[in-house]
Image 1 (tube, rainbow, N blue to C red):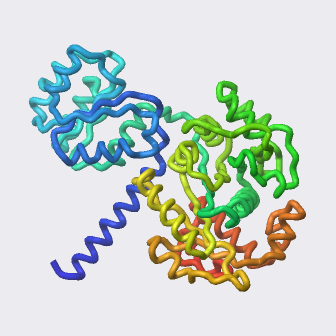
Image 2: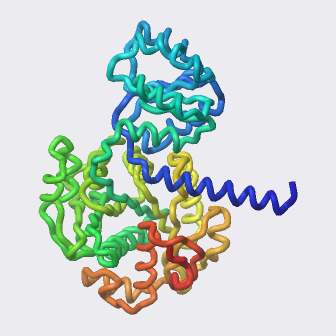
Image 3: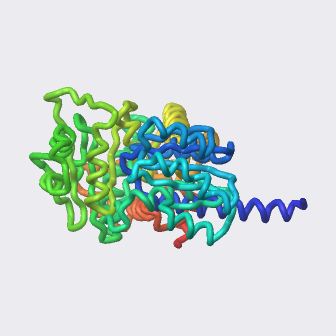
Length: 423
């Protein structure tokens, strides 16, 4: 193979990966179902292992067995069948229905079956569907194929589309992650006239209410402490209107109690937020707990905000490594370098900072104490305080990136002009 041929094939493979990634992002989270996969090949077993680790499968009880259709029939002769059985078989089209007959005899009427076969035969496909098989997929299959098939069976096609969830977290306390999250939420709602909800998850010390000059009587505490009451109607009562398209789910910002939560405490809130608005922005505090890990592993996009020093570099690297394990099938998190160029502070240059992270920043925001200070003290956003400033333009472009409206190229200090290629 020549170098040119290798480059062409690599480019085609990369394009296919991007296409499959896009298909995966369009798959809704699967409901609470039980799935048992019987794999005859290592390839399918690896695909099912990847499915098991995907955030969209967090509610699914998945069991993977190395075995054939006969093994499935033997197992379910004495045990109840799950909601879905995935079967891999090498049987030829003439013998496939006969091979499935013993399993059909022991399956519950409500159990769905996906068959993974090796014969691309439209006649076989139609015959299987007529005989009650939910889907037939031809090898080689990818994770996207399997999850799309499961989604087609168990996700209501008439269901309202889910909103996009974007979480912002600081690599270190005091790096301005909350300020960036609030300005981006405001920018998304204004730029695109999109209903946006900003949820402040820092219950004891959250600043979203101050930044938007609000003093709501209720907010996220009422939602997290009463999950049995939580639905779209209840959430609407807890929201505070900040602008024509932006609503705030504020933190109490009080120390009258200890805010200890279990790992899944915020999942009901995330689910209702996604059903309630096209975009939800989550201001996640700089902590590492079971619930914060759960939030970061569940959302559609993660944005890490960091200042250019050694502690931020170490923490950003640790967060990136952890999220790559928690979100193995998702795009890497976005990185924003903030407070760059602070007077008299030794800094790590952006290129040196990003090299060990193996990620390019989507924005480099310069240190501007007057602009940010005036905005914070007046309860206004940067685009309201100085709409013509380069930093206001930077927030506008970040809003485009995190909502998927532009493709990222390369960040430039002080702004994102030239950073983006519009789709």
